[in-house]
Amino acid sequence: IIEETLGCVGNPCVVDDSKGGNVSTFRSAARQIQRTGRKIVIDGPCYSACAILADMARKNVCVTAKGSFGFH
Image 1 (spheres, rainbow, N blue to C red):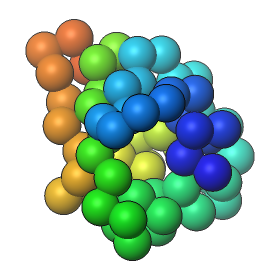
Image 2: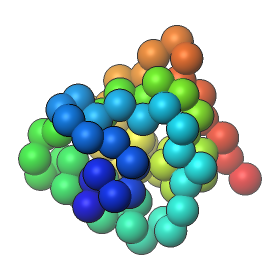
Image 3: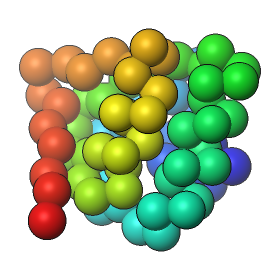
Image 4: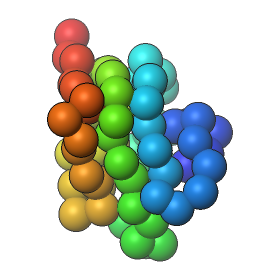
C-alpha cells in the first residue's frame, strides 16, 4: 500500500511530489510504515493526507531541505 499511496519504490521510500489523496488510505499506509519500520524521505511537496501520514509515522520520516508540507 505504501508504494501505491506515495508513488515510490525502494527503502527508503523517497517522496518528491505527493498531492495527497484519500485520508483513510494514507492512514493505512502510515500504520504499515509503523509496523514494518520502513523509512520515508520527504524530498519535495507533501500535501494534505501525505502530511497526515508523515505526522503519524514521524519516527520513520526524514524531511530534506527540499521537502515541504501543505495543508488546507
